[in-house]
Length: 165
Image 1 (cartoon, rainbow, N blue to C red):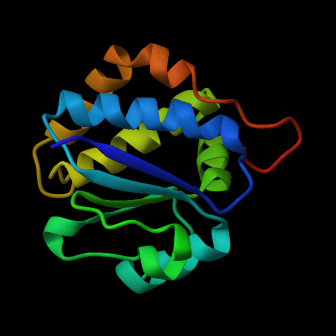
Image 2: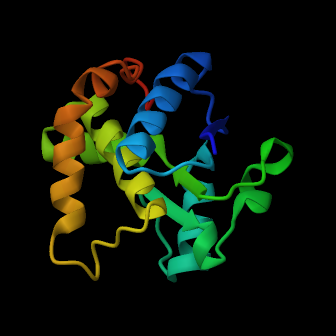
């Protein structure tokens, strides 16, 4: 089975994000021995707050949420709309403005923060769970960040003066 990545841009990040996000996602899934379809949607804080409230009971935005098809989770119909595709690995929602804010708060490079965020979400689709493991997911995130550094560096930087990308 092949990997199919669909990138849904709900925040106006532009076409420049499509290729680098797809390349990074494909590399992560290949490294994990996973194949199948994944939808990655970039959403605004209002959409992310809604999703976080519905699925985690938290009335605040977060950087990333993952929905594994294996767990019977799906949100794409409520956010991706017509662009949604049938996924057999799952869907990821990413809020670029929160990712950007976290990068500033942590003194991190925004591209690296976005790369970590995407890797984190994809590892959840691969079955990792940092809330129940003994640090395996966190170690794997760091390994993949190092191994895929060139792909992370290829992610576009946030636009100057913007609240995100």
